[in-house]
Length: 146
Image (cartoon, rainbow, N blue to C red):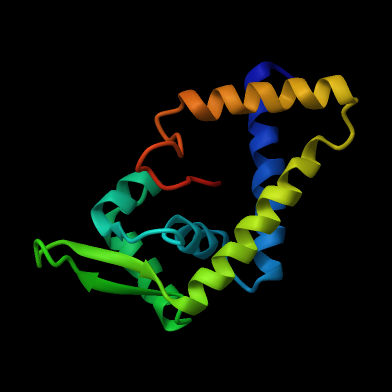
């Protein structure tokens, strides 16, 4: 198995773990990603579509499904009514905080079989990749998850 194959399977491991955690909260991974992305502040729909790698139509459908669960809501920007902002509802914020806490606690379990030095190296490398990625959660871009 070459390096590309190993990265492919690592992404599968991460996505499966993420999906398991989301399912425990009765959310799809996409719904969890969306609600976590807006948990701290409203985001423009166009910004979210770009950050999450979705078409505007796909994001709209995801928002519709998530809004029916009363986890997010839309509002027009006060400065420009053409801009649609997505907010976490109070219920959505509570759920997003719980999901996010569980994800950050349990996702590192994928490295549990590594020795301590390898776990530290994995954390260092994963951090470096995330920090230098075009999808880095630093700044105004919402977190992007599998």
